[in-house]
Amino acid sequence: MANQSISASVRASILLMATLALAGCGAAAAPCRVASAGLKILPAIGHTLAEPTDSCASAIDPNPAPEQ
Image 1 (cartoon, one colour):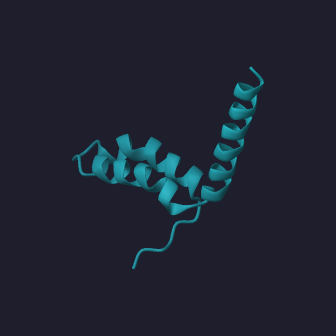
Image 2 (tube, rainbow, N blue to C red):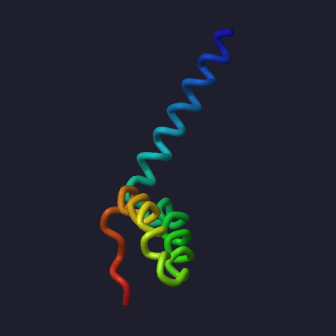
């Protein structure tokens, strides 16, 4: 039983470290940005539907690299 609790705490620590390492990382925000771009293709309603995914991406990576 003790091994399972240690294992769970180790997994939680690894997950926390990975989350902190990716904080503000564009790679973590990429799925939100791709979904947003796909939704914006839809005429008339695309930008409205993409607002939640834009918010998701902004929460993960508030300062994305400027487009060139």
